[in-house]
Image 1 (cartoon, helix red, strand yellow):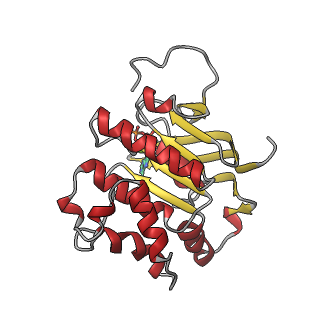
Image 2: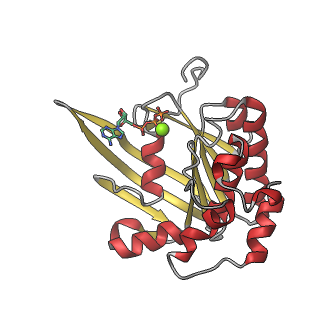
Length: 232
Ligand SMILES: Nc1ncnc2c1ncn2[C@@H]1O[C@H](COP(=O)(O)OP(=O)(O)OP(=O)(O)O)[C@@H](O)[C@H]1O
Ligand SMILES: [Mg+2]
């Protein structure tokens, strides 16, 4: 693929589950073009989160290669990986993972401050406005609705202007309406800031918002044509 920002080659990851070994990823060749929006679907346990973790440098494969924006993650040391995670990749999780005793604003700047960087107040306010939570900046996460908390988490993921956004079931804790709202905003934001977006989801309506849908089955990319219905 020309202009791939993400490329995995023969990616394998096994986990030990009691007496047996689970192949969470069993040889995944996956590519995403710069600025593409790809959704990843497949039933529970098929390896979606594992794939996202490998791409984001949160975990290392047993074998195979992950290249993101020209960088081979397996050639990086711990320090380089930590920087990669904070600067290159923005993560959004189902459970928001906001720090409860920091304001929304401080939650957004906190990861960058770890690096002694400040995104600039103007940019943070711009993100909050675009996500329709400008008036929530000084509140604590517990005072926000689920959808608002997830939009705050999106602002936090975008604050470092990462090249790729990795979202693991970002609407999984939201009702359908606010889930679609949040996803629509995330898509618009990724387009605005020219980011590559990879979203794991169980929601087929959300999956269909992407440029392309990739389906995993038993740790492999599934190219079959059988229906996905009822598999979530
Ligand atoms: N830390 C771990 N220890 C042991 N097994 C694990 C671990 N993480 C994942 N697995 C196993 O690897 C497989 C893939 O897990 P993964 O979390 O990637 O699935 P998933 O597609 O994200 O599922 P879900 O839709 O339920 O989130 C599963 O069988 C899971 O039980
Ligand atoms: Mg998962």
